[in-house]
Length: 107
Image 1 (cartoon, helix red, strand yellow):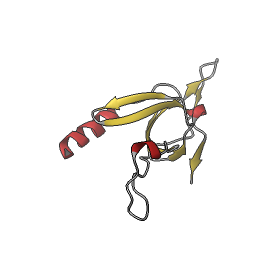
Image 2 (tube, one colour; image 1 turned 90 degrees about the vertical axis):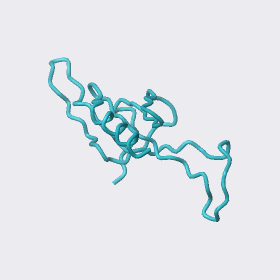
Image 3 (cartoon, helix red, strand yellow; image 1 turned 180 degrees about the vertical axis):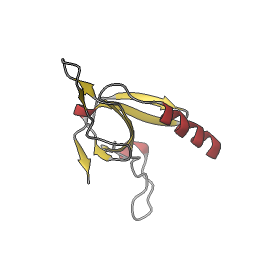
Image 4 (cartoon, one colour; image 1 turned 60 degrees about the horizontal axis):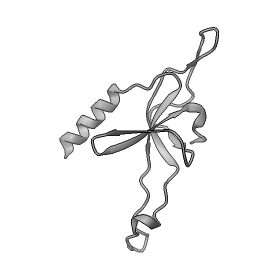
């Protein structure tokens, strides 16, 4: 299992989003309460928080100038409830968003 995880992570390092796109791994919703009660899948909500895995170089203006990205790998971000494209690598699931679609960055 550890070898499969390292293979997925190395594949992700090779996946560089184009333009102003950001590859994000969503935070997994808690399936157990603080008291130790396990919640069914239907009771867990989609978490709108994620960690940036990879970022593209940035968008270009009509003149061809590069607009740099404001996000970096490792940033914790607030995601929209819907949108983005799902990318599956092995058992892992990631989302690809345009930088403008990401709602905010946690300090």
